[in-house]
Length: 144
Image 1: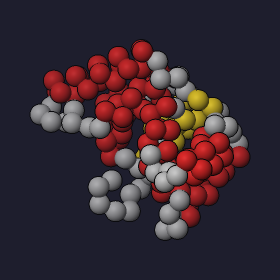
Image 2 (image 1 turned 135 degrees about the vertical axis):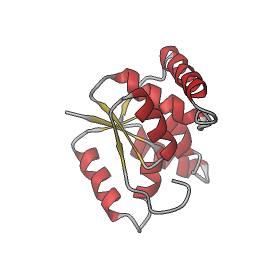
Image 3 (image 1 turned 30 degrees about the vertical axis):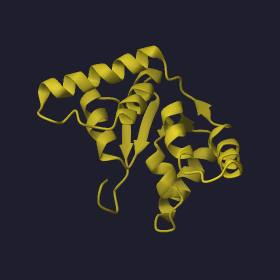
């Protein structure tokens, strides 16, 4: 059974009325206990909370009950390794957000059953390069 490491882009789009399909897919996967998270995703998701009360409500209601993948020193080293490799292979293709390297490496090192799930084109570039399992949603706007 796959485990989906849902990027913050999934959580954000699931909250938009324009994408009920993502809301439904996330809800189904949550019900089947197929969603995982990690510290870099949580930091991005929780950045949107406007008050401490909202922070606690979102964290405890959505993220705390999930399976947590470890952001280890090995995943931090792997993130840097992949960025360096992309820099060597192309001019500028390594210029992706640092958090995306950390999310991808956390998913990659967690095992072959972990599928990194996102809208983010930066994560697509990283995951295509590493060859790790991923599921990329179709985008609906600029910047994705």
